[in-house]
Image (cartoon, rainbow, N blue to C red; front, side, top):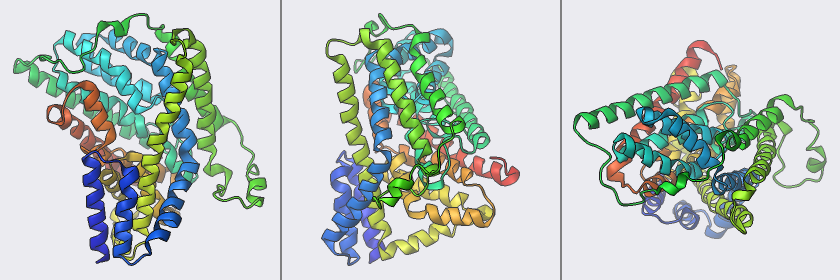
Amino acid sequence: MEVIGIILSLFLLMFFAYRGFSVILFAPVFALLAATMSGLPLMPAYTELFMGKAVTYIKSFFPVFMLGAVFGKVMEDTGLAKSVAHAIIKGLGKERAILAVVLSGAVLTYGGVSLFVVVFAVYPFAAALFREADIPKRLIPGSIALGAFTFTMDSFPGTPQIQNIIPTNFFGTNIYAAPVSGLLGGTAIFILGMLWLERRRKTAQAAGEGYGNHTVNEPEHKDEINLPAWYVAVLPLLTVLVVNFIMTRVFTWDPSLLAPFQAMKLPLVAPAVKNVISIWALIIALVCGILLAIALGFNRLPTGGLAKALNAGAIGSLLAIMNTASEVGYGNVIASLPGFKSISSALMSIKIGGSPLVSEAVTVNVLAGITGSASGGMSIALDLMAKDWLAWANSIGMSPEILHRVASMASGGMDTLPHNGAVITLLAVCGLTHKDSYGDIFVMTVIKTSMVFLVILFHSLTRIL
């Protein structure tokens, strides 16, 4: 009965999320449904367990969500993000239209701009370029997804996206964990994704299919007028990367910084400085990036534009963090139920290769797919099982760095199922439907998921991080 309750709860959450209902409202509803079916008292399960775990997640990651959203909004409203995208797309030209769109998304994502902002920044130029090159518009979402949702989101070491930050809190690693494995997997994703998209372009060309007649969200040429110079626009992105690197790899943090706060017996204090260095470093880097972006683009903001940009970014981050925190709270309620023990035992019993990596990859991927969120699914998986995977890794002499990279990469796999918020937003911005373009997005997902296991195989054979 307990397992049936969990399965029913998961199905209902996935169904309602797909239908567009907010997980902030329905994650606790279906978590409590499973809890009552397993005999847990209703109100304590909500206020003490669900909310307790949700608040813990917010405490750890809200600054990253907020500052990342503000940085992206400032880059968007000042025209700096559009300038970078425009320069790359125009520089490579219509002969390499797909590559131009992919690289523009990749540069912005790796520079710290949020995925949603990247979609809005890249799409107008992608549409204009695809129209000029007479490439089917339906290939734009797949191209943007490859550039923004895959190798620079969580594969390449040093990416400041939240999917690469979360594992640091559980494994005591930093965002440069397992650099060779990350570069190998990310490069393979890029190459295979480009081969697929170019094959699709050639097939359409042979069939005589062009850009097509589209009227929904077709961009106007005024998007290209009065953009700042690209070499100025790229400076905030480089600032985030450089400051983040310095504060993570060069600057020496005092390991006793947390001692006074631990002595106060404050709730939720990190166990050690190494667990929060990556978060502290990214906070400092994003603040520097925001300040520089404001300084460079202030004159391009309309009257009252600075307050509008800052407020919009801050308010927008609330929805993102609450969605993910609700999913984390849901996962922890499920994990507390007797029926989950058999599920977790089955996942931990995956011992392919004699290491926890396959178990970790499958668990993170499945939970990300169920919740429709890379960060949410990974947070649930790590909150529930990171200690077991880490103990297993320590027992065989495996570095936690590879656990970090596998978890990060696996999170961005099946989270791109049709009910994923980023997929829905991407299609809406492009003025296309799931029927038009979801197939190519799904292929990017399959490629990315497969490359996680390539990384696992590579590490198992070479022990190279």
